[in-house]
Image (cartoon, rainbow, N blue to C red; front, side):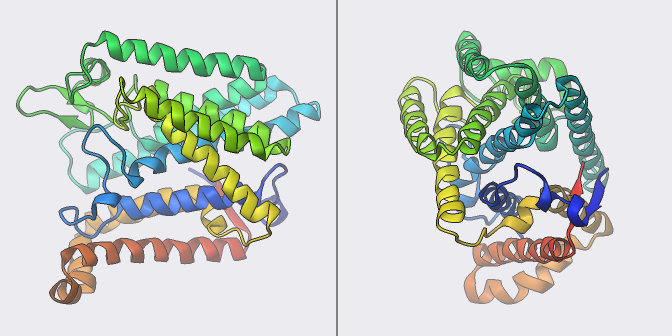
Length: 367
């Protein structure tokens, strides 16, 4: 599943790493854990929930931010090696193996979830599967193509996917062409089935991965600007992308489920400016890289927390832990929303202690 590297072979000493990127990745992973692990799904504050369909909440910024950072990190990791004469073919093999491992870990996590929660069907698509596919494209693009080709690929993905969605004639839940394709290919193995019509939808499905790939390519270009010291371009590109995304949303709604091209640009603009701000704070102003411990052990935090969740659910301990540890004494005093949030914060705090312990011993899990 993963390799544990210790000491100077660990993630903290990998050439091309920037503390600001690790910090931003770590904050994003912590946010993932926070929104994925409320104590009570019936009582979640609105900003910590995804938009029901069209629109964007703060939670809808988390996954695109992570994929954007995948692109940034790919550039920072591979470009110095290519410039030092590394073989593109050898690097491609490494990228392919790592991408397959990420996808495999995602499939394993879903197998555990299927068993732990006694789900009716196994779901092959998911967050890590999408990350693996996007990392593979970013790695191939870095090894074999030039920046101009990256921009052409980005434009082709945005334009082609927009045309595909428009050709479907609807952006409605279950009726859009992306959902119809996913249901045709995956059948009952999609994330959600509409009981009224029998149609399916998967937020990490096949067509919407085109939008996710575009997000990753945007991160690829941002990483190149960052390594060249051109942080001002991040601010400018972020403002332009945000404006273009907002304008495009007048015709093509912002939609995380479909990962619409307008959503790519709008969230990409925020990601670009967040990266520029993190770089300014950490590399320029010398502030501590808060979140770095999560960032250098993102796999340990994300996969480890998921395995813990599934183990607790399978053992029947999940509900009693929340009820006795949080709900019984918080709900009468502060209400169910505070209790649910307190559990999520405690869950993140637990994994912060884990990754801090790992970082202090220079243990980094990589796949």
